[in-house]
Image (tube, rainbow, N blue to C red; front, side, top):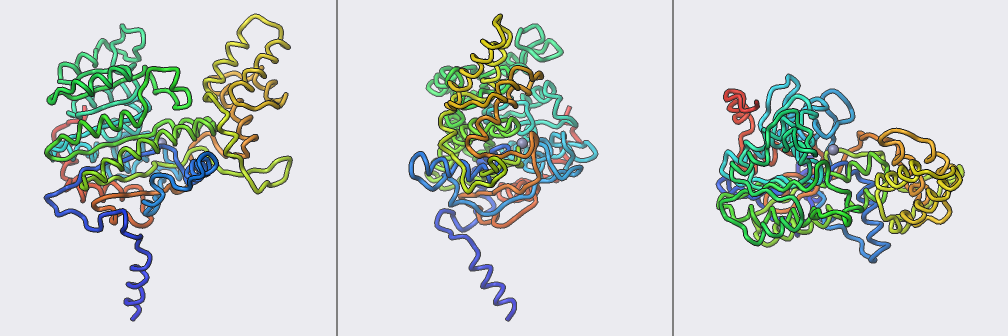
Length: 473
Ligand SMILES: [Zn+2]
């Protein structure tokens, strides 16, 4: 009787199958998989994006709201709070490891990734990000190193994996030391190596379009659109960089011609960076860019009926919350509309402040110029004197940007508790064949295991092969 009641409860709490195909595919028909990772995107970030949409367009639904199936916990082997390397390694390999680890276990031994498993099965694969391509999240799918800072080594490994599409930033790790933009410590020209291995290399949005038009079937595609990270979405208009959605669409277009299916990882990388900077408007705009990419992925999945889309963050960043005290009193509101007037990231505003500070002018003129710049770029008329005073004094690479952020946060009644990540659980969404396997709350390592099952990939066996073949050098 107890079992019957329990069974009934389980039936009742199963999500409505309306938008997900109820049955996992037969073993021989592994679905295409698009794994979308909004880096540093916690539950409050979801509410922020939805409230903004309600204010702006009277709409309630984010593209993935109806696909929420659960949540994950994100801790690392050595800390309650994960970094993106350990969090990503869990998502990519199913292995719990230490902060800084890139697809290696706690003994620094390589562990196989979903992308490697997909390649081994003959699937096509892709990585699309807005960070450097060698940054933690893309790296954990495509390289094995004991320390995430070994980005030059990561770049070399990435080019050996036969990944069909790689799009993002981070050109500096692919250029030889002699090049001005280079961050390599050797003469390796990895753009040349990529071309020798059959990659078409593109560096601007228009070159990406061009490549899309004259697509040569046999060619793989490497797009490196900036020396470091790509621009924040809020600053992107001043660059020649493609949007995350455009990169995602190109990748899906290319990969879906594969006869044997594909695995694509798409990361909204800079959602996290804006969280680190407590920069609410940039955080929101990068979430919107990610949402647009998600719409494209879901559209492709709805069309072909054999694509599983899983959306999950690696951790929360910044301890974001909506609502805060004002003059010691709690306020039952926050103001998404105040984020609409912000026209630049706090980092870009900080650059303007720095150039005002370094120009030859009296202190009072500089203060006036800083105040004017803040008003012009944030839409806030009554800039408090203490923010201007602070901006006249602070030093350090992130300190100026961090001194800009409180202006908008106080105005919009947005709170942050940290410039780092936090330990809170993050949401999990799934659509398509096998989506029901993701219902519930899981450890972050469960995601890779479930995906590997659905893709008929044996991660443990592949890990053995990797270690035997020393494919990790
Ligand atoms: Zn992260």
